[in-house]
Image (cartoon, rainbow, N blue to C red; front, side, top):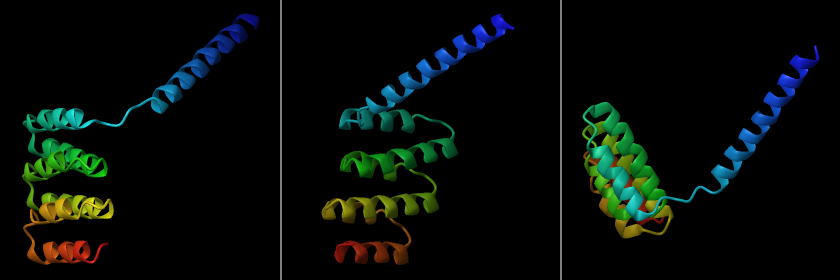
Length: 130
C-alpha cells in the first residue's frame, strides 16, 4: 500500500535525522570543567540513599582523576562511606593520577586507603612511577 510506504519512508527520515543529531551532539560535548565537577560533587553529596551516593561519588572521583581535578577527586573519595568501595576507588584514582604525572596528588589519594596492604602496594607503584 502506497500510504504505508509513505509513512515508513517519513519515519525513516525522522530516525536518520535523530541519529545525525545525536552524533553531532555527542561530538560537541565538552569535558567537565572544574566548576562542573565541583557542582556534580555537591549534588552527589546531597543524595540520601548511601548506595546511590557511593556509586555516584565513585563515578565522579574517576571522572575527576581522568581530568586531573585533584580537589574534586580527593573530596569525592573522602565522602564515600563504604570502606571497601572507598579503598577500590582511591586505588584506581591514585593510579590514574600517577599515570598522568600527578605523583603528589596520587600519593595523597592513596593515603585515604584504609587497608594497609593495599595502600602500601599502591604507594609502591606510585613510587616506582607506574
